[in-house]
Image 1 (tube, one colour):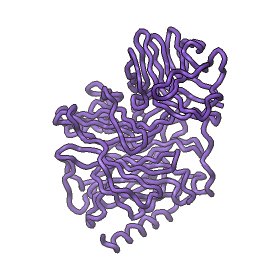
Image 2 (cartoon, one colour):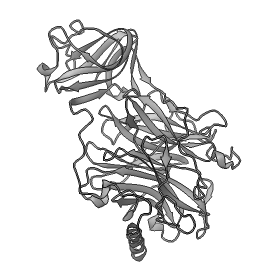
Image 3 (cartoon, helix red, strand yellow):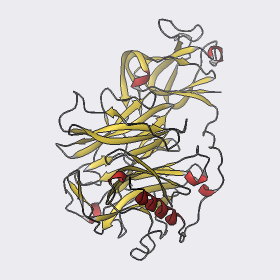
Image 4 (tube, one colour):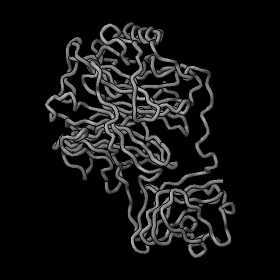
Length: 496
């Protein structure tokens, strides 16, 4: 590593951090650290998601997935500014738990020759200035670009550019707001792929920190990766995960590295490579991660070289390290019809779905052009844009019975409390609590003892004839068994 080069970059980042903001009021992000806010419902003891990786026995029962729905108001942010020539490209939409504001960090570029060029995935890079921009919203639907004027003030007065770095290529700025780190100068963290014009040791996924999400300092850490990466923090533990890309043979494939402090990282390991069920044109382009009902899930971006299109599958992990695709590999988010805003590709958003009321929003990168195809002929009105898709609260994956079917979960330690079920059924549903292994149903918590429930409920309490709650089983290993005709069950919640 060229130490003087790295020192120059770090000092330049610090200088940028000292620049004044114009027409923008700083938020409380720079204030003294406060502990993370409590969960929306502090009465929750534990949640169980009925995803395929948490199910054991089943009869007349199948996995159930809910395709994401695209609202009519899409796309919600289009390229309008002269510095957004490439469109509104890959980025992260967060909702700050501190002020409730939606914050969007996205990449774009504008013409401006750099020092030479480099070929990246059949595209010559280096002819444009790659920058990161910031937009914000009160509702996640109507967005504004604050006039920050941190960079390129003369060329673009009133711009919202927050990060620039001379490069052949900068890609996929992935941002988290970290409430675990006690240092307020490191409240926001960013990972971005970079190809340096002078120092090859700076090629890879570069890490940055910021007190406010607007002024960034390069940490000096570069993770080994190609482009199309994603940073995730498990807010249950504070640990960081970097989803990276390399090729296995000619196929884009996915790797994982992790860190406890954002400084020292594990060596990357493969997590997704093509298998016997994938054809020769299958590539794993990018992925994201999130938690739902206590289970770690993610969205995996697949790219079909033969059609040049991308779509999104659901994936899951029991420990954040070992990942698996769903057995049926369902397409939960697909490109739109020809000529629409995402007809060329639906690329994963680089942040978690956001719960708004009883609906999750997943913001994604929408392209009317296929990967290596200029379908729009350069029409500026059809440049990449920000779009979102939705699913109902905790209803993304579950189990569905046919006839008189049932299923049971993996064993887990009972937290006690009251049990609530998220389900849909026009008939009767019953719930039993089973022992692990070869054990049967616990006395008092059998299928026959359960008071049947019916209807469409995000949260319906389950009781038994002599047992109104599960306090009697607290600390014991249990399994949940659900029985019914044509039941669609998504999750269970234990509450005080």
